Length: 133
Image 1 (cartoon, rainbow, N blue to C red):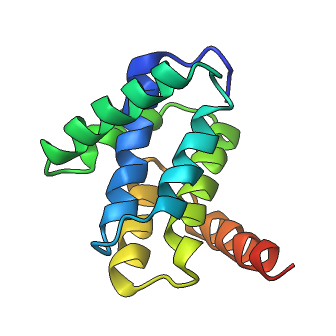
Image 2: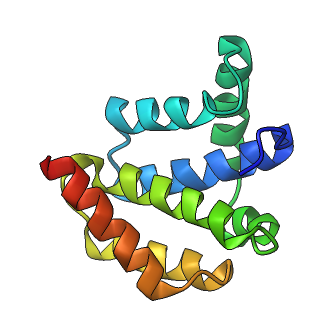
C-alpha cells in the first residue's frame, strides 16, 4: 500500500477496522492499538492519527452498511487488499477467537472487494501461527 494514501481513504479503512472490532460488541484497547499501529505506517503525527480515528468512529457510527467502506477498496491491488485483510484478521483474532459474526463479516468483505476466500483463509492461518510463536 502506498505511503501517500489519502486521508479520506484511510478514514474509510479505519472505519472498516472499527466495524470489525465492534462486531462482537467488545472493542478492546488491544484492537485500538492495532489500528493505531496500522496508521503509524502512514504518519507519525499523533494528532492526525487521533483525528483519523475520531472521523472513522463517526463514519462507522453513522453508517449501516459495510459497502460504504469497501467500495473504495475494490480497485486496489491484491497486495494492498492483502494488507487490509490481514489487519482485519489481526483485529478479529486479537481476543484469540473468531465467532460466526466475525467470520461472516470477513467473507462479506472479501466478496465486496473481490478478494479470494482461500487467500483470506491463508492470512487468518498465518495470524494464528504468528500469535502462537
